[in-house]
Image (cartoon, rainbow, N blue to C red; front, side):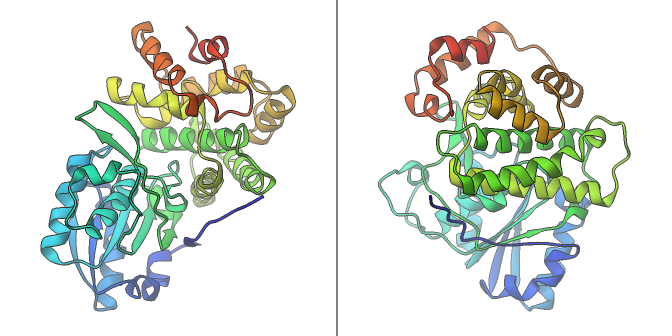
Length: 359
């Protein structure tokens, strides 16, 4: 067995302030990468500004990261970083901002390269130092080396071949407390997908299963919050964000599996939130697994059956049926990708994939 996780992760209240010296040790001028509004509303941006100012570290802000960040956005931020001569990057937000920050850190260390470099499988990955600060509870990007980008030129969404772990990740549940309910729900389903897909994975090990078990136990305590039966308290937000980080730790080793592979078409063609797109295939994916494994995972997550999980998903994510035309495309995307088919812990042939996609 093997496990590798080089990122230094802290989880605590007031985490950014408490570890401002760790941030300052990474450079003298930061490029802060985030979306347009959420980091300013939830206090994370102000915390980062205060920490940098306290430590006499300069910074410049790029706050134009969209949901499902594009190659064009990465290149635009990289141009700003080059112009401002920054020497490290701070990503604040959900998976979109953190994944974009990884790609931007790579491009800023390779200033003579164009956007094609992002998809160059032959090159060695070099990058500026990177800090990640999650403000949602799904992506786990603060603990993974993966950066998922939208490529409008190829009308596709997927991970770039470069792998980059953050140098430092600072996790503070307070930043979830002002998030819209839809963001909490969709990202929580994404975290559930990470945990389940890591376990039902051809690369799973006893090491990665440790993170899955702890993550699902934490996640299960938040079910009533997700479907609105209980008002969220601080400890609920801690469970949500820690389950997300543990999910990231798990997939950092195993990668994801079929629900994620199938989700990208729904996100690109229908603008379906990523977590909802993953969740669309999650119950049917578990249904195909070994019954002992399926029952174990469902029990940890607090479900008595696959049907109960499906019902929960429909409540949490405002379920809508996807048209057969899109599902057919989704099916063909993955059927024609042997590497994706090989990620599950069970043999996935055409018939099995059809049942998972439900066509």
